[in-house]
Length: 420
Image (cartoon, rainbow, N blue to C red; front, side, top):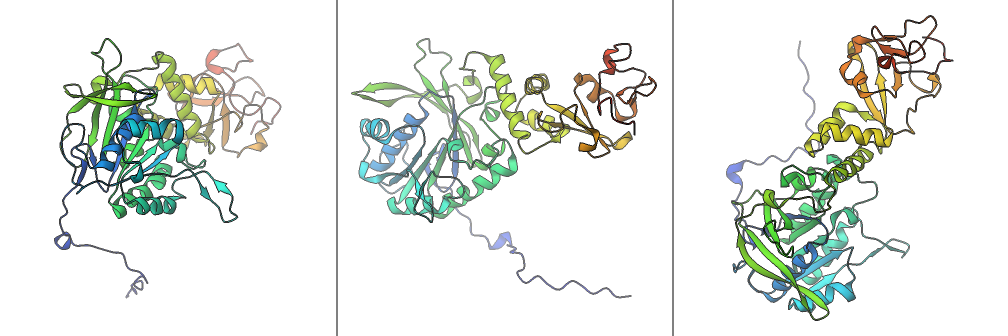
């Protein structure tokens, strides 16, 4: 018997033999720190001078000056700069800081808004307005683009904790950098978690740092008793060896301020990562709550996937459970026996007390202590042995209404529902 092969696709896949690929040299805006034609991520807590730092770099690019460590970029002279800044005013903050840094303002553009097809002014959203960014970059011949901060420009439908959403938002930004040869620096705030690698301290999905070719982090110098010195360190570099960390401080300049660079330091990104918010425990819980709300914003999700995603972000299981309790998250069991699985949902979804007909027949909700759902396997759950009781409990236990056994905390349909 012969089997007919499927017809070839109308548009066959594009396959490239590596022997035919032309080698390309990486070019740098700031060697070892910020590459051209790539995305760089700049992380840091508020009030550490991230925006000031980017404006200092903008001034250097606009004048064709050397970088903070004295090195020269691969640019051939002064170049344009394009700014997206959602937090600082152009007139009272950004322009004065650029002037204090010595920028050529004729080479610096900022995009404030866009217009829809009806002529209505709209805020800028990524990736939807990527074409507007492309036009702005070309208009000023920008070698440096600053998006500050990233979260302010993501679409409301983008879950910043979900890898797929983040990759959909940042892939067009990555391609824009490649098309225009511009260095795109994306600013992000740190999360509230502590005790983990600097690579995982940025807010949102790990996919954000994954999309960047280099990562930088700003933190307070732990050795500076005055609390005024800051350190810029590398968290990631896919293109070269990590560059040395550089110290700086902010000084007054008339009615504004500017960055003063203090030279290299032996610190690394990990040594400067501290919880500058003061309440490490409460901060970690707040971050876990925000993470859990994001994961469950689209409806119920499998508990195992949530736990795995939390571990990637450095959120401990204990902190995640506290966040779960704070939000009143429900545990929903699907199926019975070995095929059973657990999902989590916000209170509005699968709330305890709904009629059983509101759920599929293989689904029950559980509001009891965590030890029941994650240590009692599917084979250890059964109905309460009390006659006529329809509550599902751990094997060998009775429900809360019968003998008040703690391991029999009520789970499943309400008491007036027929026992299936």
